[in-house]
Image (cartoon, rainbow, N blue to C red):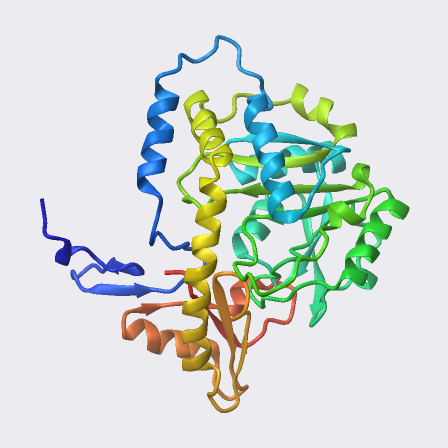
Length: 351
């Protein structure tokens, strides 16, 4: 066995020539402090149980209940009018919701900027239009009239870290109620900042028949976990379940149920909150005082965005960083192709 001193620090990957690259791309959660013992124990216990001959297509009832309890404890959601559906990945969860609500080619307004992976996933399922944002979050007054679905990230608009105001959350809920549309709230992770007070989800403010959520545990546990979920209006649940194929493996569902009910997932989120708070403080200290720049998102989530002056193009900064074997993401990658991209770089604080 190699000595621990040879282990590569978090955030470093091997380059082609064997030199380490500092990987600060924003889609890579931290592996530091991962609860490996609890993870192994949960999978071992799951492996001792024989799989059923006919598993429920929407997921094991115990797992669905555990996900609902986790959302209640972490987001204050009481899912009286919703159902939890378990899927193998976020793309599958999105497809179930969009097909049931908007048909084969729904029109989706997605807040702009937004994570590139989310835009790509939605773009494979329908027509994506940009929904402008400002310092108060996505703008309900700019929702295109042709939209079937509006997708927003109210708790931590990535990559700018903007939290949507409660008034705008109510306005989104009112749009869905009045138009017959659906507000979709991706819930990939939390704020990771205990100092910020909770704000009600759009699901809590709106009607159950017009709000939905998709989520996973990739940013709390691991991106390799093949399990995600959708929280759907009860009116759509039967249609969705009828069209479902095989979801996550029986063992995977048992293991995640174990991790949720034992409190390991919640404890992991608390650990990451403490870890990211310290790292965000370092980022603010290192980048927050550069002349002509503005640092955003350094109080929420696991990434921060440095807005650059007009005379310093982000692409040139990224080339300089790449020459020094540092990988970050250009802010333009988060914008809709037809939008006006900001000039900045996005860097993870999680690695």
